[in-house]
Length: 331
Ligand code: SAH
Image (cartoon, rainbow, N blue to C red):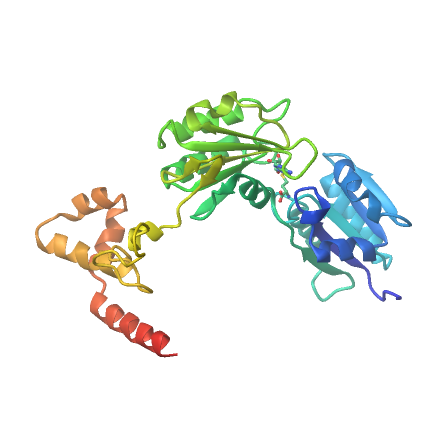
């Protein structure tokens, strides 16, 4: 097929094994005239490269790769820029769009761009250790090559305090060894020393290795460039070699016995401590004399937020929610 215009495909190839690459990623590489990527990733898809122009780049040539891709696409070629995991997660998608915008590119112009999603390291590592991401999570890269340390440290501090499950990308390299120690120090200010931690190296690759530990021992583990560190939240546990973060069913249902709803809770509705229930209780507590400052302290929320909530007309919201759930249950 003749390609009237060039195309850049930002292809996430997943954690490393062929089985965990998507059909679209495979097809995108297959239809490309030019394949650009780190030496390691090029090796991972070596069997798909016959007859193609292959551009192997080193670690620090990211912008180069994007510029090269644009130049080839402008010649009418289809270019696959390959990233491990997902191309948009600490990958090439961002820098490529930046280079394109710099060059005056727009989505309507000569070169088409497609981002092909892939399973990121966080997904791959989570799957290998059990189900650690079943509640709110986030990722933080410890790489300070492009991000100032105070920015990284503030984010670590904030998510540690907010009890997220956290995936640490780029936790350590030959040169960057202290960052993981600092991350541990910040986390220990908010989290229990026995918080479960999984250290996953080379997920779905040849030297795959999984180590379970606890927050206080995290930085002593064997951690490198190809490691992702998963830190649990305050409810995460490890059982039979599996790391699990509860979704919260136990807050509403009796997990042992007949699975009935716990007292005061209703199936399909917000928890009694969900938004509306909580607002009602807050108003009642305030009416009984609890100060805004005391309520703010109790719920670990800003006083001006508590104040705004106390002024919200919850009755109206409650009526709407009730009407909507009647509608839902009838359809
Ligand atoms: N785009 C990639 C991330 C690139 S940043 C993705 O979506 O996964 C590089 C970091 O990703 C590594 O330092 C490591 O923390 C993590 N990583 C990538 N592949 C991995 C693998 N197979 N096993 C464990 N961690 C991995």
